Image 1 (tube, one colour):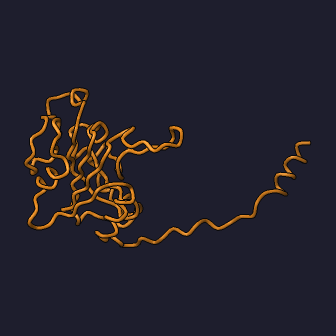
Image 2: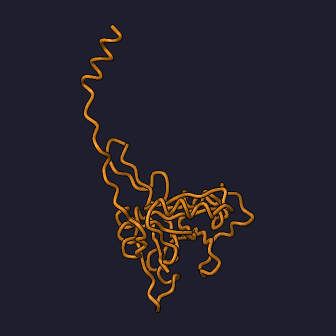
Image 3: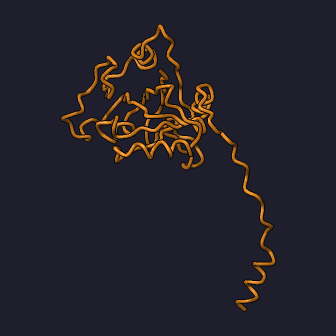
Length: 189
């Protein structure tokens, strides 16, 4: 009986098919390609013009927010001091401004690690997230990204962030901000 079942399964086994071709992103570290990939994941992307400041861009997008965490000392936006505060005391958080280590053209994801975060929870509890990314720190694909991570040995925590938090598993209805920020603004400098 067992052999009959196995033989039936083998006889009805579909033909092997080739795996789909994965596009070769190669050394494509194009800024425009990164911007398009980020927009696909519902992020808003702003490439700073020479006469623009980061502060102006943030104020344009988020002018009415009260509780802000700014983890980048070079940006002149007042926020909650996080050095001597427990992560649980940061919540609720309207806006978080963090530094991205590098971006990935293939999927528009940005690596954020604890070298740039005083508390790991910040990108996840903020209602809105701003990631500052240097355009020189864009890699072509996830293979390049993982090679780059090998050199980030000082980090004991990191995460790829691509777009605002989204889920559609609740009655097939898209919910934005369910497990993280409702919006992501990427500012490329």
